[in-house]
Length: 239
Ligand code: ADP
Image (tube, rainbow, N blue to C red; front, side):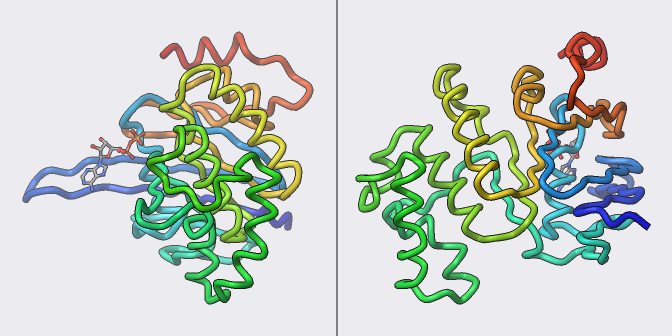
């Protein structure tokens, strides 16, 4: 049996709010994702993309279905993947290097060792000279770099990125896309990437999952390697 890096089997989540109100956020989501893949998920607002990430990361309990990492069930387990939320969520009272090492510290790595690992990376990935700066002193693009490095240094094989470049202007966004591809090439992670931007998905990804409007289901899964599927994606996702 093939063992995937990440596998979702019939994952469904229904929210119950109030006595009679039920919202099916996602329904029967199936995904099979191999090692070192860059996979984008596109879908209209409210189709359950963030719910899906919250479930994969263990922040939210699975309704029904199963999440497997390296063939092992991880339903409801936190800490098996790195997860970067839409907002950078850097702590304003910690300088950049202290923000970047946060995940390592939470894992029990000593501050000294964590800094020794982080400082060369800050230099290499465009934050050299800003180690002692605080988040409000940095541009949006630089804050995203710091937040992404923090996620990478948490050192999990699978990284979930929820629209990390959504708030950036077009030029910064295109610089950040290149930057992310460099980082991905160097660290060999499996990346799941939520975006609204078809061009971004096509530029960055090996594979794209297209979700339907609520309840979120997988409408189509396509591999982009060696294919030019842009016209087909535009037809399937006219938003
Ligand atoms: P997306 O990230 O694609 O915009 P979400 O995952 O945030 O979508 O939400 C999917 C659906 O589930 C939406 O209709 C949203 O209102 C609903 N939803 C999300 N979280 C909750 C919650 N905690 N309680 C009730 N409904 C929720």
